[in-house]
Length: 340
Image (cartoon, rainbow, N blue to C red; front, side, top):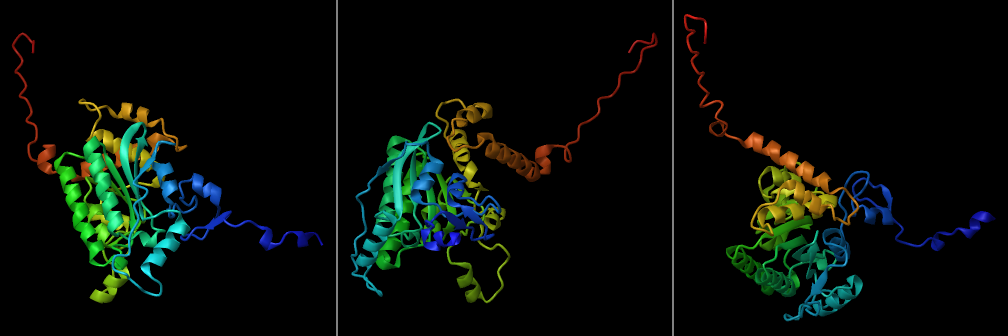
């Protein structure tokens, strides 16, 4: 029979991906071209390090640094398997030696220092090497006077390294403090999930904190908090939208618009020339994007949102309409000959 030729085992794997939000089955190649964003419900799926670099920087510009750094089992930690064995298996699986990748590249032609966390490597947990790489990225940005962009995705500090992992919170914060004192620009992108010691340290020390739509951002998880306080949590608790409304993050940017938004923020906050460039010139420069979408789409939306926010936040004394109304100028009396 003809149907016998088409067996399930003959179908290659990885061709389709099911969206965890709407359960839509999507062609994996189409999903990759759409920045790992579901075309039906706009859910942001997890990116690999290579995908994140490709979506953020100009094609072929990324130069990875300190690739030889790898963690050491200093505490001889053992669970079901030893920490050393777990590191070896994870590195072989994800083709990376640690949960943090750093390097330099160009974003619309402007050189930046980029760091990307890999959630596939032990949940993106922060150990000694992760803290060291973050610190090295900060020092490179400070030495070369470049903007720093860190893309965070983590479950928190790495328990296999005990107190050594907790020390990285102070270490990275101290490095970023020196960077801020030197006038450096640091932009953080918080993806799903960003929790624990990473949230409590370098992830939330940025000049501008950007959250991806629907990302879980917090210290302890919602289930832990609810079981501790024995109260029902608000809807959308610890999601990007919830935190934006309460001032914990500065803006939410969809992944297809992230590259252009980062460029605009860098040009506004740390312009390459002494004179500020008009928005039209910035958008023209951003048109060199290789991401395959309109660079003005995210920028126009951001400008519109900013204008609305500014109008809502104006105080009465700032507008001058309610407190200091304009006085009417008195009319001149007409002269007898009829001339005014």
